[in-house]
Length: 259
Length: 259
Image (cartoon, rainbow over all chains, first blue to last red; front, side):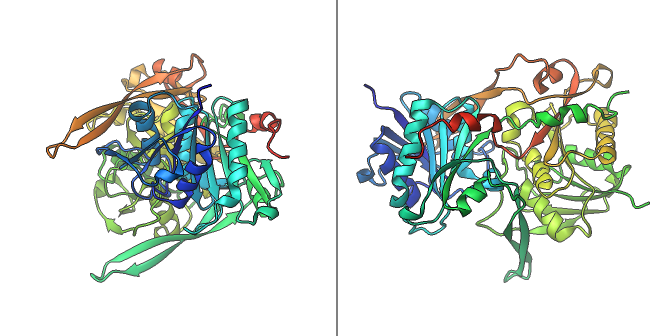
């Protein structure tokens, strides 16, 4: 039987330890081709490169990780998926996995996430896709802890298929293996960031800002990704790219919009 | 009575004719403060600036347009909204309007849209928000044609309030005033882009790509934004940032994810 073809990408760049771990985990399940940004792309949301050129290079970053082929790309995570599908892969992949991100993409973070935009881009093209994030920003994070969970989710996704128009957003708490209680299917928690801009003056006397902020959870539900993560579970949120708020159409139809 | 405070932004940059028109249309409804990118940011999706600094400058681009204050910002559309709300505006705006974009943000384009990411960012912060796009990429597009429609939508949004967790995605067909049949509340059409990469060789002999593509409508529904636009209507899609595909949670719960 033909081994499944797995497209692996991320937003932290092709040398990120989280990507290297994901390549190792996937190479026991299928044939792995990597198309990943040549530089970090965190917070890129669903950006694509319209007004500039894209470069791509066949590279060997870590042959021991087990990828069949690796390509670095000058673009965003969404660009990597587009270029991979259209130009670099020999056939349509059976699944696209993105990550493992260094840091959380739970709740509202999904909106800003380059990791998830790559998965969503694959989903738009009709390819089953999963984004993985570990709630640990450290470059030395221990990814081996999560190996069996990541492999199980991908294996089940390949076996069952992911519903059309949906990609999975998987977040993993920063815990020891023995502390992880299991995997929970969740909804996206209501939350936002309370921005704080750190205002400084540069050597030329000009004001500038660093964007910082504090995460603010606005949701007490026990069916959310934030609840799962805080209680020792891996969260899986089925995430869609039909953004229509269908339930509000009737209400807005009562507005006086037409004479 | 205090006039409503209106935050105006866009993704085509502070000098774009579509933004200048939106400022003029809004200045008859309320007090306008502009915070817009200092350069074009099309296709930026919901990118934010995490690894770099942000600059902002008080400017006067076109005082005759009627804004009380204008700021240009070195960041993305989402950055502009964050910075505006946190640092530049004296009080919380009553509404945030983004656009008028030079080109469509209907159907799947909402995912890539900087115009809509600015509106969504305001929505996340609990501020009513509307993104406007005219299906005309030309810099010389005639925005006066759409004045009364834009004003009516904003007036109704201020009067009725926009449901929580929802922002409006408004797209306007490229038509004469007399040809526009009215305003329709719609759902986002299923569609994608069939990418085509234009592969070239630069003067140094290196391959590079331009991302191009063809829009592919996958939806025959007559309740979609694409149908409305093709049939002479302005489309209004209530758009949410809870991306959970709630209807699939039960199905994914049948997977064998926990021992």
